[in-house]
Picture: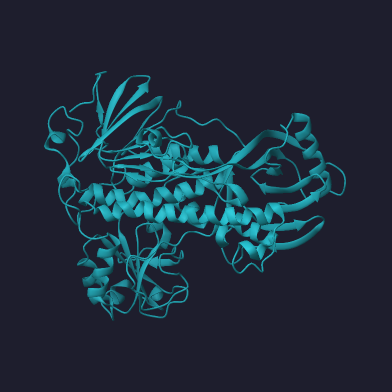
Length: 570
């Protein structure tokens, strides 16, 4: 089968190609740019526990050296501290420059044989039929490319979205921020700050730490105010720093500046046949602490395992449709929460009028958005595929699982999230005390033989794991976890028939038949002929076979159709 074509080599496109490669799926990554990102320290991203774990799992090495975890989060109103959040009981948000995230992902892409990164390639046409997608690019050379699927990760002005004729409605200039990255010493090293009403002419400012004493400062601007001149920005910096440092502006080194205008938009459709949208091509958000890049990474993780299943074994149309159903619904809820809160937080309206259960303060609501909590920030929970919840746990059905230590049958113990993104379901037995047993004993004791037999009979590949405990789950609870780390079902003990039904529901049933289906059987015979785009590619693994993954895997055969013909190849 031909590789997946990914258009756009920002953090979302890079992550998607790596996520596909981790599941044995080759991709061609088309980059309109020169193959590197311009350093912009004032353009940063905040990753919470699920997306930081994903980036780490994909091989991004810049998280540790160029990112900073918040030591705490302070909230102030005028001159009074109203709230301080620490992170002893949960992972702290990770803050790093976007170019550092992209560079780390690019390095991982360069080292992976299943990803072909093509720079200076601008998409200008797209055609699809029942068996695949053909696109044409201009740039260093004019080329046709053939793929099994196509994903547009090409940003707010997405060419893919325009070629598909998908509308992109929403609101323009929801918020404006003046931004500066500077090196200085502040009274709270390593702690982020949300400061509302620091002076009569500044409504709100945030300060977020980066490594080496660098801070990103954001000032909320009037939606349609005057242009921010360099002198005006310097005055903002000096006044803000003086207000935090006892009336005297401390020495500082100004590194980067900018003015960011935030828009809220949501594409009408995220799937058209074999073409999909992800990241800023599908949605724009960013007001009130919401994170557009982070939502794009969640798009990539949700879509990757579904495309991998389709590429290797075939998938139902319902499974591929579930990408839009889950991710578009989650982002729409985030946008809706921001739009409801905006008149309250920016216009001074009554909070209870707009948000249910709104006894919380304005500052707390904003803080939750920045910290990945509440309606503005919490990780999404997708509607579970089956209504099986025999055992309540602290994770709601469809929610992201906790990163508990788990033990595999080979005896290795790792965090649960380290095993995600491999195209397998995870079946976790909660068995207190097994952490101190020899695996030769517990693999043959109690529920394990029956559970192992049930797992081996599932309709999709699955891995059996054991956890010494899981929040809220009693002993002998069995958890069914999707490849992207969302809880699908819980059972009280071993229920082979129910477990099989739940696993089948996760994949949304058997693959769709015929040319309109998604399975390997839908590949036209010509794709394996000598000289065709798929010639020489390793065979598609059969049902139950593990895909070739890792440094010993055969590199993908380029899906290029050479020449500059006026019409796409037949």
